[in-house]
Each structure stands twice: as structure tokens, then as C-alpha cells.
Length: 357
Image 1 (cartoon, rainbow, N blue to C red):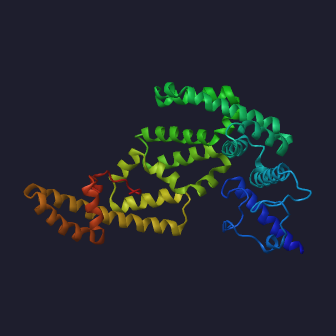
Image 2: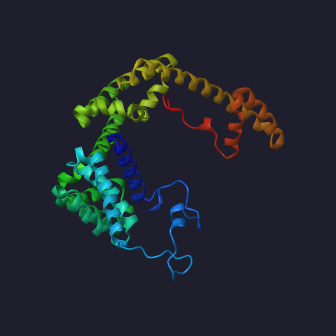
């Protein structure tokens, strides 16, 4: 057999083993077609029936192997495939607590499905064999993770009774106590960064003396302080989310509302440019803003006409006129608007969010 063929067969076996391990295929079933009951292979038909063997029962095979041996071998092979897949996915960063925890949580789900009553023992056995050099750290993190889960469940009612600030303080107190402060901060690093930005935006929004351009500068400075050298990468990965957080500030929306259309277009372009969007993306957003402006202008005119009609008409007569008005303002989208109104949603009574809707 060629080396390439061996590699293909080895890869296929690994994939099938992984699928079986994750219950995507039932154990022992690696074919697309189920075996047909009552069918026999040519080899089976050629095998003579021993005298005294009941019909339909397979004759005993000489040198039969205990079924437990191949089952154990299959399990070992399955777990080895699992180990290799984990190393491939997490190995280069397995020294990081957050990566360790992510791997452990995946393994928890795997072993809980596989062995609901003994999943923890089997998981620890797997960790000891698969990652002997990191077993102590992984076992400790697993224990702390389970203790934290129990604490959250036991204190659910208490936490619900707290306001957001008190709840955050209580949760962090438990995390620091169970995991250690340094490990807890590394595990929930993204949450800490997110909260730091939320707090910063609240401060920026409260600064009524700052114009939009200075608020944007303060926001970018805070992004740099929170993410450090990773700020450009964060912006590149989440440009719209980062931009929307700023545009959603009530003070920013008020300032945009007070601008002329041309001033507002220039301000939105500047915000997006500062968020790292390239020229092509900036042009797409500008075109979308113009489409939204036209839609909102038509929508507000429609609502004014609708209100006037509702003063003099009702029932079927009102609906008949509204169908005409909706078709005039919204064209092919008229039926969608009608369905929304029938469900109680009037999209053009919602606040206008410049740069967002």
C-alpha cells in the first residue's frame, strides 16, 4: 500500500472515530447504508454448517477473542483521536487559563454525554493520560470551575435580588476567592475589557461640554488604554460593534439630530473613518445612510397622512385607503408594512438612530 493511501485511510479512520466519539454516528456504524437483516455474504454462504448447530445460529469460531478486548482497543483509539484533535486545536495556547477552561468545558460536555454517572472520573483519567505535564493545573482548574458553577446555582436567588453593580461585585468576589485573583482576571479578561469600555462610554456621554469630535477622540483613547497594542486588531475584528457603541450614546444622537444633512453625513463619515473603515466601506455606509434617509422621509410622510385619514375613516374604509397610501410610499414593501401594523409594530414611530437605522 502506498504512503498516500495509508495517510488517506488513517485520516478517514480518525474522522470516523471522532464522529463516533461525539455521537454523530452510532458506534460500529461507519457506512451510509444500514445492514439488511437476514442477508449473508458469499463467504458466509460457503461456510458449512456444523452438525448439531441450531439453524440461524452462527457456529462457534475457534480461537474466538473476548469481546472486551476489541471494545477496549476501540475506546483507546477513540480517546487518542480526541487527544490529538485537542492538541491540534488548543496545544499552542494551552498554557493560557482561558484556553484551558474552554477545552475543559468541551471535555465536560463530551464525558457527561458519554458517561453521565462517572463523567468526572473518566475526564480526570483522560487528562492524566493525555496531558501528564499539565494534569495538576487542569485538574485544579476543573475543580474550581465546578465549585464556581455550584456557587452560581446556590446563590441564584440572592444574585437576582441585587442591582447590576452589587451583582458584579458579588460575582467577582466569588471568582477571586475560588480561582485566585490573577487567574480570575485572565479567565474573564474580555469581560473586564468590555466593562471598562461601558464605564468609559458612560463618562463620555455625561460630558455635555464636549462636542462629538472630542468625544470620539476620548473614546479612541480609551480603546487604546483598554486593549493596548491589541487595539488595532480589536477594531479590525469588530469595527461595526465598536462604532455602534459610540453612535448609540444619547448625547451623540442629540448632536447628530441638530445637524444639517450635509453636516451629519460628514460627521458619520469621520466617525467611521476613525474606526478604521476603508474608503470602499465608507462609500457603502454613505450610500446606506442616503437610502435610510429616504426611507425615513417617506415613512414620516406616510405616518402623517395615516394619522389624518384615521381622524375621518375607520374599519374597512380606512384600511382600503391605507393600502393605497402604503403602495404609493413603499411599493413592494407595502405588504410588509401592513403586516407589521397588524401586529402592532409601527416602525416609523421608533426613535431615529443616525448611522444605525
